[in-house]
Each structure stands twice: as C-alpha cells, then as structure tokens.
Length: 407
Image (cartoon, rainbow, N blue to C red):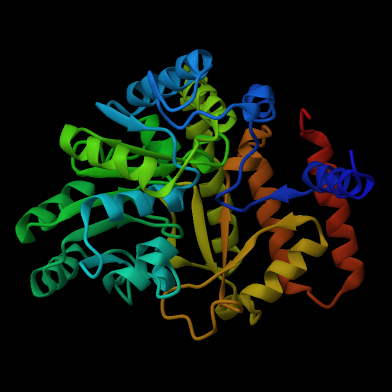
C-alpha cells in the first residue's frame, strides 16, 4: 500500500478508536459488512438486474443481489426493492426523475429547519431542476404543523410531497402526510434515511403503507455500508424506478456494496437489532436530559428518535462551528447544524446535532451518555480553560478505552 495512504488510514483508525462519535448519521459496521465491502466482488461488472445482465459471469452476483432484495423486502414488509442506488441522494434523484418532469412543483422540508439538500435546496439538483416549495417547522414549538403544511399544499398543488428529515428529532406522521398528498393529487415520497433502523424494528411508524415511494440510506441507524435503497408497493412505480436507476442515472452497480447491504439487512432482521435500537433511544434521551438539566436548550424540547439538536449559541454564547471545533479538540466528534430561526450562516450555525447510534453500537449505556453530557457541558462552559479541557480529553479516552472497537 502507498505509504502516504497507509499513514492517513492508520491515523483515521486511531481517531475512530479514541473518539466519542456523536454524528447522528454515522455508525460502526460489523466485520462481515467490512469484509464484503472490501471483497473481490469489487472486480465484477454487472450492468442490469438479476438474470438480466449486460455482462457474462454474473451468476454469483445475481444470487447476492437477489438475497439483498429479498432481505430488504422482508425487513421493511414491502413488495419491491431496488438495492442499487449508490447513495441516498442518488436514490432520491431516481425517484424525482421517475415520477416527475423537469420544472414540476415539489414540496419538501426546508434545509434550515431540518430537511435535506435533496429535498429542494437551491444548490442541489432538486432545487435546480424542480420548482421547490419549502415547508418549515412551527417557529414556537419547533415541530411540524400538519395543518399549515396542508394549507400550503392546497395553495401550491405540488406534484410530489417529500416527508423526512436529516435534523428533526420528533416522530413524523406519515399517515397525515399521505392524507395531505391525496387531497392535492400529489405523490408522497418519504426519505427515511435517518430513522430506517427504528422503522425496521417497529420503533417508529413505517411509511411503507402510506408513501408511494420510500427512500433510505443503508448506513446511519441501519448500520450498514454507505449506500441507498428504494422501496415501494406499487408495481408500476417500481418498474419506472428500476429503469431510472439503471440505465437512467447509473451504470454498473457496486456489487461489493450490494453484498454489504445484503448482510446489513440480514443483521437487521435478527432480534438483537431491535434490542440495539431500543438502547439507541434510551441513550439519546439520557444525553438530552443531561444537557437540558445543565441549561442547554434542546430544539423542540426533546427527542423521539436517535438525535437531538442543541442550541449552543443561546445556551452558552458559542456558535455551532466553534462548539464543534472545541469538542473535536477533546476527542468528541459532532457536527454544527442550523436550527429553526437561526441567525447564523449555515457554515457557522447556532446549533449542534448529536446522535447516539455509533456509540450505542460500541456498547455504551445510559450512564455513559450522562457522563458524555456532563463532559460536553464542562467543555463548552470552560472553552478557554486549557487545564479543564485537557482533563476532559483524558476522561473521553478513558471512556473509549472501556468500549474498544473490534477492528
């Protein structure tokens, strides 16, 4: 291996070993998933779908991709699954292009209020190619106001409504979203990328019965490789989506990643995966309560899922980027995040997004997340005290040493 690449890889391994990982969209995969994603399957080209390829020698690839599809359908209790999207964003793009025409009107959650780039941001393909109408959370409660979303939909009459978020800590009422979509004759697309693991285990309402199409990533709470997945119960839409994924927007699928996805779905079907997801919820609540008790403002006053948004600017007069950098210095990895009614620019922000999936995978329990909350509190309230920060870094490493990574 190239020495410079090896050096960077080794440093990243050390970082992962000794850091508390609180980025809500990250997790640690199993050895089996890691092995499959780095396997000889990366050598094989397999344009097309199982038993309908444009290359020879795909019999083993077909078997693996068929298993991935079968496991995905069983996990989410749906009739059709496309496991080939390279990412959540490409999964979303495939749905847009399969169901809409360029310039069609789409309603999606404002990025500043917790949505995703592909839900209509002006710099994303979604905002460039489509007429986007954004909806927000209520400015006071900081949760979705479905009556207001309905009024907006009736006024704008979009061709598609997107439900789902990347930084929203409350449950989403997919049934209500479908009622709104039906009222205006719109497709309902649900992007459940962040909560897929909770949905798979019945700890969040499933969108499958309500949405025309559901997209997700396979990492985050699902704890698989980085990739995308599209689900539906509608056979006509499934055919359109398959044609749009290939040959519409992608060429050869990444079959080493598809194999890792299959293993991810297989693992998520096991009883211990639901036990893990329950602990994810317990741990984030412990962290949320600890920070709240220490005077931090939690957006929407709590959480129903795997993440929280913390208003650090109003709580201790520090911006999101400065809080992120400060916590990085003591081996706690987070990400700055805009919050509702944010007065700072997105690259500065007033908030932090914190999640529990990764460290729950490492075995941490509620008491550990209480400790993490206390460490974060002390760090942000003593941001100029190097002695205190050095001591806190030692506490962090002591905790990560207690729960070692397995690779």
